[in-house]
Image 1 (cartoon, helix red, strand yellow):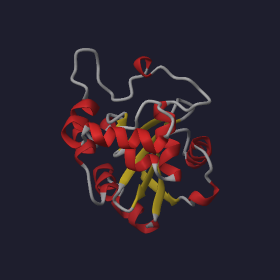
Image 2 (spheres, rainbow, N blue to C red):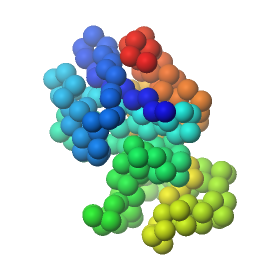
Image 3 (cartoon, one colour):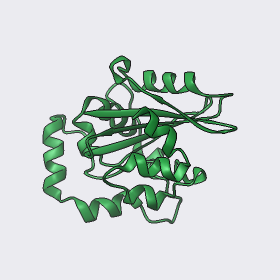
Length: 188
């Protein structure tokens, strides 16, 4: 079971809308939907979760490229909506992306790689091999941990360390930090 909502920032706070994922077939569809709910091209945050297995955050700021974070890429990659996010972050077969050229984890030169540290503590080589076998492609394995930009909500009140530590009802905790609890609960 999935839950998804869009939080659009306005000058008076946040507005929430329930997102019907049945009409969302690609990440582009989700981004277009987010942009259509934006007020004056302000920030829209798309929140998706699957029964506490994983959650994803997509931040859209006007016409800028979206920023994406997924709490557990291996779990998300096994679901239709989660795979939209992980495919974008890892690069799909249709578009070759050099991961070394992307700042997927939000670290700066000289900073410790947050995603690699998380993986060391929560996955084993067998987990990575199993994820690779599931994909059946021999391509880069999907990490059994967070993937993307954990700093995408830093300026909105959800620090990257807080985002990486979330579990359980993560979307409610994010909404609380954003000051959007009431509007999120109204569409839940």
